[in-house]
Length: 276
Image (cartoon, rainbow, N blue to C red; front, side, top):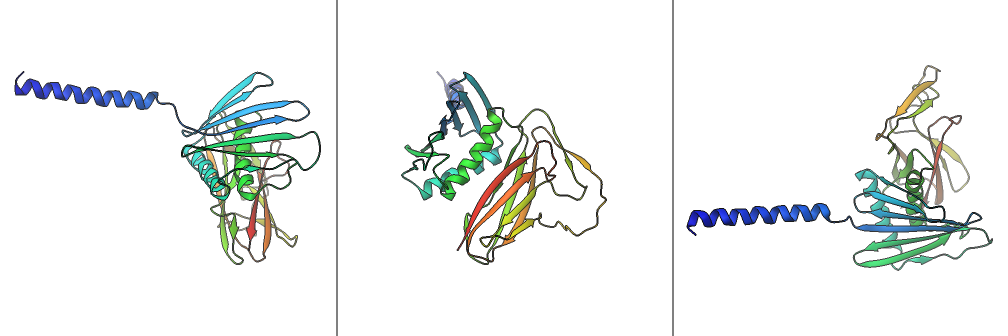
C-alpha cells in the first residue's frame, strides 16, 4: 500500500468513526432527570410522570390504562432543571412529609436522579404547607403534568431567581404562558390596554396589591371595548413584574391567565416569597 492509498484508507477510517459517533449520539436515549408518582384518593388514582433531559415528559395512568407524552420548550425545561437544583441544594438527602390528617388524600413520590444519586421526596396533599423549594418545583410539575395528561391546554407559571429576599429589596418576577398544543388558544381581554395576566400580591399584614407589568400604566385612558387575542400553537407570552418588599414575613402572589375574571377558561398559579 503506497502513501496515497494509506492516506485514503486513514481518511475513510476517520469518516467511518465520525459517522459511528453521530449514529450512537442519535440513538442514545435522553437521561431521565425525575420521576413522579401520584396515588391514592377516593378514585384510587395511580399516575406516573417521567421527565427527561431533552424536555420530553411521559405520562402513564396505571389505574385506567391511559398514557400520553409531550415535549416542553428548552426555556421551560431549563427552568424545571433550575427548580430541581434549588430543591436538591436545600434538601440534598430528600424529604418525607407525613399526612397531617384525614384518610382520603393523594400521595406524591418524587425521585430525582442527579450525579449518580437517587434522592426521594415524599408528601401528601394533607401534609400542611410544603417547604418553598419543594412547592416551587411541584407547582411547575403540576402545570406540565396537567397538559401532558390532557386536562389542560395551556402551561402557566410564575418564575423568579430568588424565593427569599431582604426587606427593601426589589424582586423581578416573570409570568409565562405557553401553548404546547397544535391548536391556537383564543381568549378575550377587557380592553386593548389590559395586560394578559392579572397578579395580586398579599403582604404579611394582609394588604392586597394588584401588580402591573413593567412599563404598564393602569391610569392611562383606554377604549372600553373587549379585545380578542390569541396565544398561537407553540407560542409563548411573557410579562415582567417588579416589586420592592417593605415588610418582613411571607408574601403570596396569586396570578391568573387570562386577565379577565369572566374568561371561560382561566389558569391560576401561586408563588410565595419570604422577606427577612
